[in-house]
Length: 442
Image (cartoon, rainbow, N blue to C red):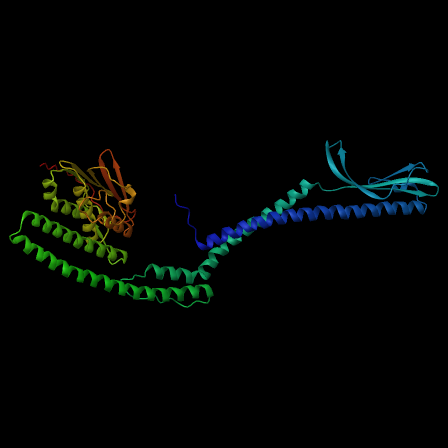
């Protein structure tokens, strides 16, 4: 299954938000520790000051009852009891009315004043860690929500402005074609990276056009020059066949003619594959593939009868797809010829055309190589067969060029090739589809 593809600005937004979450979590922990420590430190300082203040007032003559209250407790100790140094205790205080504990800081110390030993304790309730954490979490959550909204809106607004040169470049690259032989001319931009990308694409397309012209000229010249000696050799061999020769010599000459014919077909197939690679066949309108398929079946009718094949076909009317007419004939001819060539005497061929797919099935021997390799160049189901091994490679190339899905399957003595037309490319259909069947026997 293919992964979900996101826009560049969406990728930036997601990464930014992910980093924001990490920073907020780490920052929340730091803030929590800092706030908690600051609360304890500040409350401890105030409680210690309170203890010192109470001791000072007792020294000045104030009574215990005047100093003792809700936050201050004074207890008289034995004068000989050891002195208690000033320190702070972190304890829990039980509230009977609420039936729960509260966190409490208590500063305690003992002082010997005017012949008496006083134990002074000053206490105060402080926020618990979970209460501090809850407050910080709520604050950070609102900050993240606000940031999410702002980033979501700003990313859309900024992407239109900042990424506009990039989108223009994409549109220009999509419209570029080697066969048009027109180099890209991209606009200047103030963004350094986009400017470097545009200049690189311009230079690359110029070089690609030059290389394409050279390769095209070489391919056309090689194909033309190769056909001439092949035609001469074929003519000489045909003349030799008409001369008085022995049966053994005739077999040798016929084998040479077959090799010449195979070489000529291979040259034509390779030339076609090169043109497909260079996208020389541009699709400009939809075609009625039902009509092309019917014509292809009619042209090969004699071959079906010659090999004694039982043909059955079921074609939907007016099935329209976006495909170059020449490529349509080549695609269908290769598929039909493949079904005849790789069949068995008195075998069967079944053809089904619907609005979404074309399925061609034929009986035959099992392939000697993996089925996924049959769409590769020069891969043949049976190496001993007299074929170029390029037929299915051409089929695959045409399907890839037009965004068709093609698959091959062999099961229980049947070869099955299915071409699925891409969605959204179909033209107008007839309201009804007339179903046709025809059987031809030897």
